[in-house]
Length: 451
Image 1 (cartoon, one colour):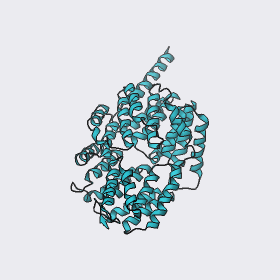
Image 2 (image 1 turned 135 degrees about the vertical axis):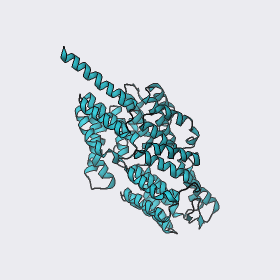
Image 3 (image 1 turned 120 degrees about the vertical axis):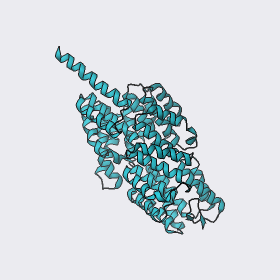
Image 4 (image 1 turned 45 degrees about the horizontal axis):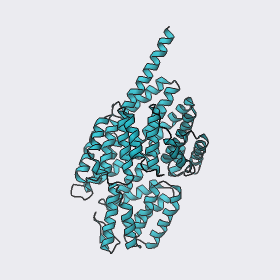
């Protein structure tokens, strides 16, 4: 039994394996590209390390890919066969078991139970944070971090990463000034805390300050140069800032050179790409054939059904590339899952998933009246689709544009006002452009009727 970097006992006997295990945790917290290699090295040196196998399974579940569920189940079987030396390690195994039983909420609760007796366990903190993020539990993210606050002072090795998680949770709960301060503190204590860096980018997005956001990201590229595919998400944020400023050429250039530099089928990368292309098209930018490779990947995922967040972005690709048959197949499958036996995820396929999917399909068909009705029906529950406010905003934009195209100007203006209010009263470029579109259209209509 050895002790890891955060003071937890781990069932390892080899110092080299311990060094790799510490590298795993550091990599998870910093979204580092090295985390997977460190985990492989840990398990190669100590194949009987049950906690390592459990964490591998949890990583696989977070990828939201149907074919990896069986691989995660193999990790669970291996972890159980290895056994665990402490209740803490056993809890990680049971968290994986809960998720495999379609109970990710229970998995998050188990991770949080670890923190009751081991508040210094930064890996359990990040696990809870990540699952709650997937589930759309913004308040629970912050509540957990509030409880942990006394355990994380500047002497804690993970203090910077704790503050990065706290910054993001604060931002998602609308505490923008506090979030910005926490994110800056995070980088002061952990210069590779890409999550904290990106939390501050979220603040700039939500407060309509794209210029400051670009300065922040450009001035801190070293904080995300080491990242796994999370670096593409940070580039996505930068592209959104250019888009907000009306610099669509710069946004499209970033799409080609960074956001979609690797044509992966990871749903997070597809979400970055599809949501950026859709935003560009809504602003009148011709994106050429860029939808095609995304739709090819999405068409292979119509029966996936792991995460509604992923499915809605696959649907964006199919709508964007005008593939109505495949889009309809996906919409039907979402509705079918929503009507099936209730589970944590099926509940999300039911609401907001089914209405949102039907609205996106109608939007792609040019039936804007139906698109607005269905997307508007999904709005109250869209938080439960998971992801961040910035990520889900693409669906809000489509809803508003559907309302404008359907001629429901008053309703669209109300949604714009509500969107601005949720951003602390900060009007961004999208809101300003759409309000001008509504006012100019209604003024022209009034002038014509007066003639």
